[in-house]
Length: 252
Image 1 (cartoon, rainbow, N blue to C red):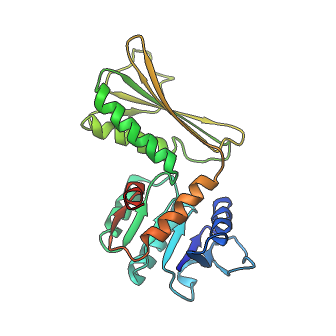
Image 2: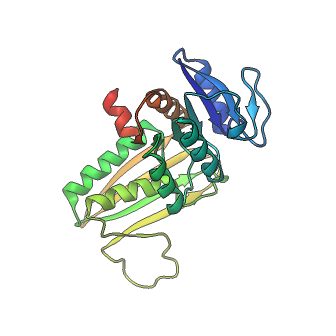
Image 3: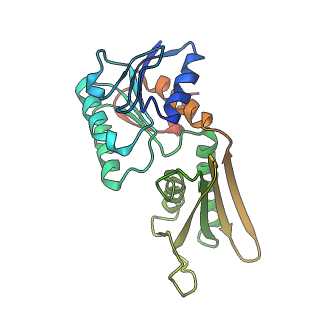
């Protein structure tokens, strides 16, 4: 039985995760962490990770990048694995995550959906075949409350494509003030915010007289929560290292 603490327990995703774990027999929630929340009927909620009275097997974080320093410190001090599912990390924060993974198991991905991770692999394969012959544009759509843009998932897709192209492409986020033809070394990034869109990502390969589009649409937040819980159960007992959805898929 994997004992899980949920960081951001009283947020929307935290509540979905708690509900999913309630239905499983291989894991349980021992505590929540949330500076603005109140306790659940099933488990207590503490304001800070260092307030936890007992060490969990894994911490799932679906909160805010500002929680990262304390989570990394707690994880390293207590040898507790971390599933980091929060978006909006800076390059510096991602470097801190990579450094922590040398000491403890860390599961980090911009998107916990199995379908999105399949989309990334398909985009890699398309890039290998199409090479630099097709222009690449990425369009992401999310609800009107999402704060970061472009989404972490869009960045993850772009980085995967760029890796296949030798890392020579530029991510271009805005063209409204540019009055010139599109450069060949661009990967265009476009963000749409509106309504209650959970998450949609289109990867467009535009060539001469033909267009290939890879698409993924999330219908509910539950797909991300399920991935995070599966990651937590997978991560418990693993050696130090940086893990991603591809590692979980290989072991399934």
